[in-house]
Amino acid sequence: MPAPAPQIAFDDFLKVDVRLGRVVKAEPFPEARKPAYKLTIDFGPDIGVKKSSAQITRHYTIDQLQGRMVAAVVNFPPRQIGPFMSEVLTLGFPDADGEVVLVGVDRDAVVGGRLF
Image (cartoon, rainbow, N blue to C red; front, side):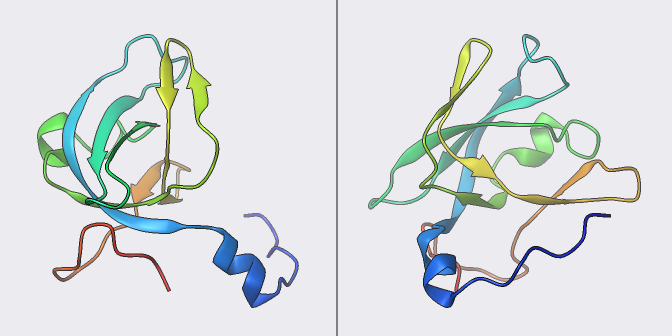
């Protein structure tokens, strides 16, 4: 496991815009080098619908992702992943094997709400 990152100022934390979104579409991404899905995520009226490539095939099926609430960084520049433009970074933690477990919420929360 990596060592903790160095301390940062609270203002630096505020520069990272983490929002809650709802997966409205999940589809296979066979062109990806590592197994992944293409996600379409709704972040509400202020941010809109964004796309993300997510390496989450080990723990999630497409059906399990439809309607799921996820956390994502919405203010990184878009990144080209093969033929797909990923606009947000969907967040997760590693399990014991290093596979991604998605960050979510355990109660109803506002789509587009910002992490604080």
